[in-house]
Length: 148
Length: 135
Image 1 (spheres, rainbow over the protein chains, first blue to last red):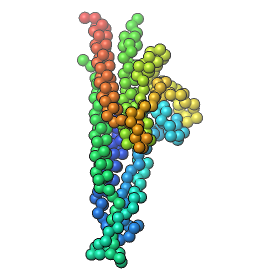
Image 2: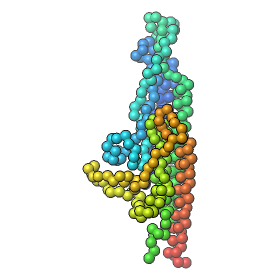
Image 3: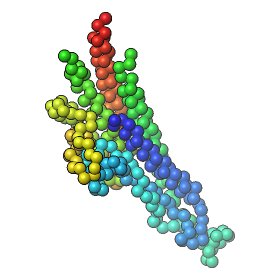
Image 4: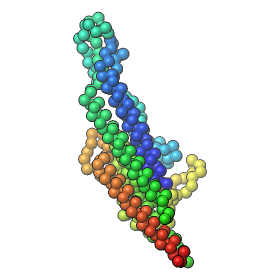
């Protein structure tokens, strides 16, 4: 019954979008976490999405990146990547974490970008909730067939 | 002799295709933020015509595969319905071709039509029940 599969597909999207919201929250929380060296500085992290194939379907695909024949594919997180944008180096000699020259390293989090990402993620989340709601109504209608 | 299949006409095929289409559109919306994902859909008119022509259309057409070495039929999972890729209306940087607004509209339209199909089926059933009762 493919309407049940709609629920699964929308469910994977909800999970993926919540991971995305999670990384946004983490980036925003650490936007001003200063550090004393390049290595220990927080870097903005972002999830990478990819279409998810059911285990049952994988036989048909032979691990090819092909959507042909797959009725509905969800989404999954392929991994989380750290941004390679340059870190900010600020002169703050009074900072307890300042290095010998008086500099601290600031994360490469772009707050405006994160805000836009957050809105996009929450919109997608809502869209998928509505999809679930609609398919629930369709299923309920189907179950009520012939009952009167 | 009363044939239930004939009594219900095209409605079961229609409901089946509508639910398939709902699944495809839901997959498009789920992958709205996935790079390189290509939106897909089915041509309902063509698929229904094919279903009625074939006459052997089945919700889960195809062979039961109980072993990984069994051969798969072409589009067995979809009962031979051809899945098409959508022509993007607007290019995006990450090569994703999902237009969320358009897909949502299609999903809502499809859901309404599914509900309509269910209502028609319902009235067929109540007609049949009345005929069986004979009162």
